[in-house]
Image (cartoon, rainbow, N blue to C red):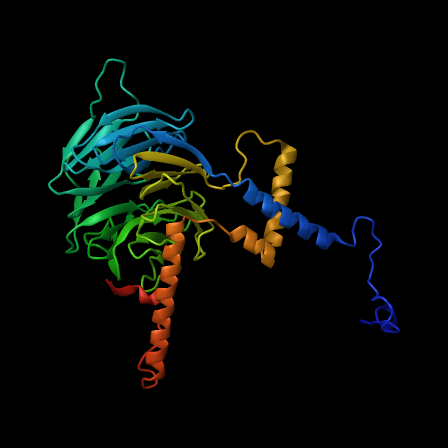
Length: 441
């Protein structure tokens, strides 16, 4: 039975102080909440003070950087391809270029490592797939491909299966290849001009997806003779990345400044629309945890998103960085790489305020405590504003304002049309459904 005696908490007169209940346990402090709040506020402020995400710049290419290839076994190795056909292999620990050679005539369209990391494949505008050794040749030896496969079709992208020796290329058709043969095992086509990006699902490794020039996203299963299904958006998708932890989900980078996360079981509407970019989104890549992804754009910025949130948690930019064409998230979940038009590869921290180098146990415990405090008080207005606020370049700020005005005008116009129309004639369409035109099976 609950009983409360008013004498314990009600004042006798209004001139008296309010009675505060007191716990006499010495382990508990009467002002524990306010103290924690101040600590959380200070931790959030220090987070912004120490936010210096730029790590280093890798220069050496003589033309814009077109694509990245991540080594599946070695964290310190990164392969990059450029517009002039040159491929470079980088030693990220020492920030130097280990190898460089001209692989193709024209653009390098894609780089993919084999699942064991011993070889890597490149495709280019010269209709060839070239296989290279991951090990550098001996001193005095020329860089020669292990194998050169001549394709009948233009090639725009390549992706390697994570569990088998097969790889897929896209161009005029989607072709499935085996490492041992010079002819495709299977060719899949769904009446489209060009497929410009392809990606294998890292979990369900028989499933792959392509983005096509008719604004569609096509799903394939390499065990089937025909493509599975297709969804058509309002604008073209530039790149596609599968979530490495959620087998059904993938995210596409679109020309309309947004990214869309889809569930393959329900392509009618995207799970989430990711906003904030102000120009065409060129590339997207997931963190190995599957909780976040990074995107690059023609607005000269790199943004990091939580997989299930609509707005970015961070934005990276520099004065010299031009259109960002490709982006990659390192397999140890600590770094992000971006390649841009002005021939540079930049290396960023995935967590802008993270301390690099050796961290002592007491430091680690303190960082964990600060993170827990920031999570606990994340909804408080002042902490929320400090954590979210970012300085963006002037051209991005102006474009954001312009886009906001355009959206507001469209919203007002639609409301006016609805007000002066017959009831039900102008239906309400959610933001998610606006961007999907149709789904074909």
